[in-house]
Image (tube, protein in one colour):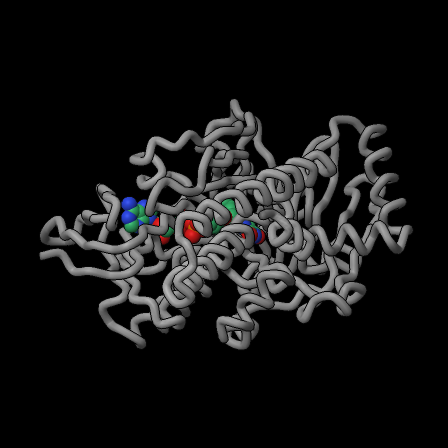
Length: 400
Ligand SMILES: Cc1cc2nc3c(=O)[nH]c(=O)nc-3n(C[C@H](O)[C@H](O)[C@H](O)COP(=O)(O)OP(=O)(O)OC[C@H]3O[C@@H](n4cnc5c(N)ncnc54)[C@H](O)[C@@H]3O)c2cc1C
């Protein structure tokens, strides 16, 4: 007979581990299935926004994350040609958020911490090297089949939460369409411990640098600087990952590209997509399995965590307050799909346009608009509350 749980979660990335740990602390019997042998150490999300930090505090993990991260109270938009710096200080919204800064901390640190805590609570609640290959649902539950090292194993649950990332097999089995588009260009990220801050005037930990030819983002995490630049669709990955390309990128940043060492180089494609529904019966889509966006503004992981925050609240009401599951789970779909579409998609598309406007004059106009925004106290505050994801949570709460 298959082992029975209340909720099975597919994928131990940041979204799946938050879902599993929050449900477990509520007293709900969870099983977290992860295909890899451990929480992968990938350099992807590095920013936790103010709204998410409140959630981390409630989960009881904020102090540990802070110990492993860097507080970034300001972020900058810089113009590579004019060297103009526009700086946003999150201290100005301290009356509205408990944590008026971005925390720069690699996403795998959160996943590892939560997986370890789950295992300490119940050593059967996390199964690594278990790749979900199939599931079927009925009116009373979901049966999940996972490929384990020696066999295909079956598990039963009331609900299945998909947090299995962009290529989600759960979303594919459901046949849910993933509407949107893929940008024609590729993105290249390089990381280095070279002291880039010595080559710029007042460099912050988070910097968006506009340029008509090659915009870039410079982000600091405790161990390295991460550099993100766009690349032409036609550029071969082998060339983008070569020393020659690396030297070219860093020549533009610190004039001695050949001397810079880069332990990580990655090329990837960027998508703007939202699943047509986040719910099908007893199966719920969350995080990258439900929506994808470009990394400008650091909204992907944060919005995925907001998905499972909403969903786990609803599951608590279903299990402990005997609330009507049908109504609540449909509301999860409406609230999160609308918020992701109206806010995350719109904001990340706009964040990219600000950096890349094609010629010097268009970019000067764009910079002028940002400078006007910064000079206007009300608009500046509104902008920071938007970027910190405080406003999107208010919008979500207002959706019936
Ligand atoms: C370069 C880059 C920079 C980014 N920067 C930011 C940022 O600063 N801030 C931000 O908010 N977001 C950022 N993002 C986006 C962020 O990384 C993702 O949104 C986030 O990882 C989504 O988390 P997830 O848990 O949904 O999916 P993932 O992190 O992809 O985790 C999915 C997990 O599911 C597992 N899995 C997959 N298939 C199966 C299966 N069949 N069975 C069991 N397990 C399975 C995988 O092994 C993986 O562990 C960035 C992305 C990139 C590429």
